[in-house]
Length: 402
Image 1 (cartoon, rainbow, N blue to C red):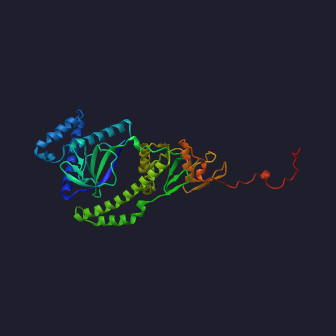
Image 2: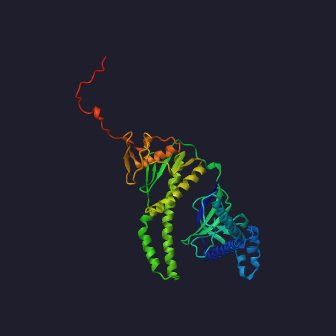
């Protein structure tokens, strides 16, 4: 499988100018191609092919005074911009055909977008120098903060500038079968929530870090300072970067938490099962901020690709599975319960069940994993004796002795 490794870049002043030029040229070519295709659609003309657009918008455009500056950047960057437009159209049409979730039609890019990116393939002849720097054509040698070694030779590198003004190099590498982990016995069901981020079928509860909630005071202060600055001024741009850096710090902390927890669960368990949550629906309720702060979708995606990478089994059960209504001890469906009911007693067997632990065990059982109900910390509740057995009978009972 293909993996993406991201490392921080520290370009110099001149290199930042060269990267800004590359971002701008790639954006212009993308918008020109999108405009040409939209014009052909409105006029009822055939859909322009990528080769024709490349010849007209890159090769021939460099010879015109209006687009002569396209020659100041690598041609590979401009070609990859057209590939990105092809991918956008392909995803849009696949959504209309039902092959993937629906998404909007391609839109024009703005120079004010908070995120800018350009991609270099092997044809661009980029390289990593013996000194550990990233050499890019018509940009120079960029300083890279290597946090780990690459498992194989990268096929492409994407230079990204995020909303906080940081630069990153994203490498695409191939992962081989040597990363498959040895088999282990435990199998796990996971119930994701807000009170606890994750409750495991073995009885473990992982607290929710609530990174956004903890940073709200600092974010509010930065946002108020931004709202006071005059639009278009340098001070407003500085304040905008302050807000963006504060949000980036929260996002980085959440991502690090997701990576550490998902890696630990995948390494220690042979199979992992989670419930397919309706995150978009929950994000439209009064719990929207807490749902976004938890980041369930990103965490589940990490579990899925890490399971495929390390040779583990990942199972996603349906969202309509009644995991919170079924007793994990006897299997009887006890009906829906309000969210404030955290502990309930099964009316069939009398077991006292923790709502989240019971749901985690049911998730594992619904996925067909070998998980026992004892992981849900079930205990027997006192059951009243039947009326016929309570007290002293008023009439003598026949003896059963022989």
